[in-house]
Every structure is written in C-alpha cells, then in structure tokens.
Length: 126
Image (tube, rainbow, N blue to C red; front, side):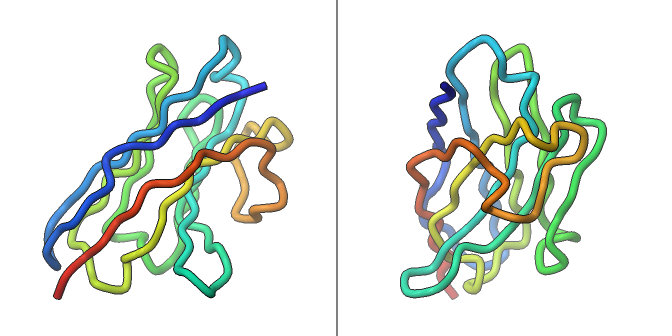
C-alpha cells in the first residue's frame, strides 16, 4: 500500500511559478513510476507528466512540455512538479499517482496507476 500526499498548490498570477510536491509513504517508493494529472470540475482528468522509477525517463503532455518539469528524490520519497510560466488554463486540482506496472517510463493513462493522492488546488489568475 502506498499513500500519497500532495502539497504546494495555491493562487498565483499568470506568468508565475509553483512547485508541487508529493510525498509517498512506505519503503518501496523507488519501485514505482510516478505521474501528475490534473482535473477541472466537470471535465476528465488529464495527464500532465510522468517519471520513471529512476528518474531517468520522463513524459510530459504537449500543453506543458516547455513549462513544467517533473523530478523525483527517492531518498526523500518525493516527486516534484515545477510549474513555470503558468497560465489561467493551468487552473485545476493536481493529483499525483504511482504505478508499479510500468516503472521504466510511467504512463499517460490514468487507468494504469494504482495509487492516488487527494489532490492540491492550483489557481492561476489572469
């Protein structure tokens, strides 16, 4: 069992930056690929970024590729999402997720993740 707790969300002006963190419980964090997704009320959850168990491979959605960076620190059981040049359309609840099914790359498909955090709200004002 893995428990995930996100933090770092908040209100920021367009063009600003935020760094989200997701801390995982347990001693097996390094076995999991990790992902970030986001969801706007009434809409489907969307993939943002993923990172392999080692941090050597990453995936990012086209909409964030030049602005967001995913990273991890296995010694701290933590995955990060650095978000720069934020836009109002980035406003959403951001979730981190863990998957053991594809540890070498992660996945852009939310149904391939086994564990989810409770989410953290990011609001970008224009």
